[in-house]
Image 1: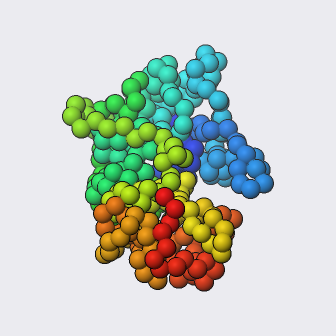
Image 2 (image 1 turned 120 degrees about the vertical axis):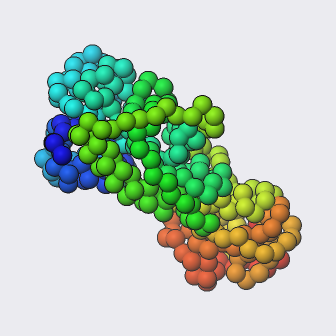
Length: 312
């Protein structure tokens, strides 16, 4: 396998295993593009992205433009003389001049089975929709939103109680291996691609915080899928009356349960909650400013009476 000159473009934790796979294969990462450092955490300390931190640890030059539309930025990108750009959750739109600069174009790793769930939040949307399968795909990028032809794909089942965090980590690992295989094929001149299907297109819109409030009047499977699809961030939440005070509580894990009652009704001492149809049992919860707790530990500090109804 011949060595490729690679420009890597990515920002969050999801992107890091792909960068490490590229380095491990011996390709030359000539530059790394990532989002600029941003305030994060309770102290709002300015933090470099996970990709920037890892790239700097390997001595890779890092660039953090706020946009790629500036002619000077595009000229600098072209000056890297790259064979290929690898894009993984970068966060900026790539204009045509950038797409055309590398000799072999730009390859994107996308966390869905395209054309299903094009867009910003494919992992969360797949779980929230109750999908039982997802995957990762290596796509040759073009100007449209996740519309390019697919070069390689790997499918992955979604477990009945799998959270977005767990699926994120699984897809990141599988995706790193897939991109590694794609680059190996590219270096041999054997990376083909096929157009995406015209049918089955859906869009994974960015998660709106307004979606995070739990509606107990919905069927249990919808409530459960929303809880796990939004765990841990932003976190599906409901209100509970705790020691005479109404509090917002995040529900980080749940499971489908047997039971019926008024929506939001507490059916037993294990925090089984009635929904519009069926019920869910709350498995892991988090009070504001607190740490995630298993239900049994949560109930030690918050008495939720059987027969009470959670505010809806």
